[in-house]
Image 1: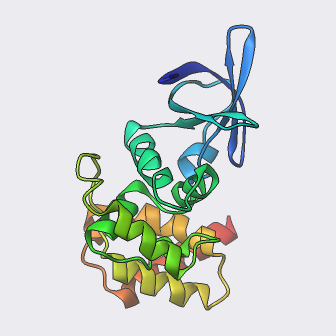
Image 2 (image 1 turned 90 degrees about the vertical axis):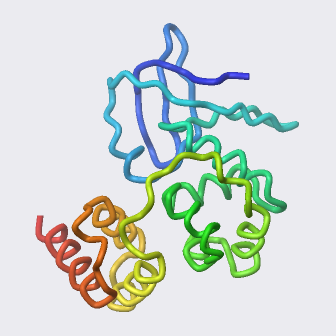
Length: 199
């Protein structure tokens, strides 16, 4: 089992990170969330890894923190959820959102992941019940239902759902935003998206 890899980043492109270790360049499958896509070339890094062994391929999957790796293992244990679907989930929503979705029995957040319908989202919740208690995480400042309502409202205005999720994740990190209601969250999302479009 390869527990981790340390080396220099050669490139990051969507779900692929190329890592140089001595004379060898390794291609790793990674989530395509902001914290991965913002990694810089020539940066020295250590990634927690999983070796995904299939009859036709060997894939090294890399994570910036062990909580994500633990959650990935739980996700691929769900019937019908393979490595690609698990990576898609971790690319779209945060570890915190997944754990809180399961704790609150709220499948709507997981259903936002492209390719995951109502049935699969509910199955993930059911099969992960009681499985995530030992995974450390920081609770979200924003209520999950408020996040979902605001996201849908802003998306209806024509904004890109991926950009909306990125902005919500940024807002969620700020402690002073914890008491935002849906209307104020919508206003704040649009303000940030408008600022990004102008820059």
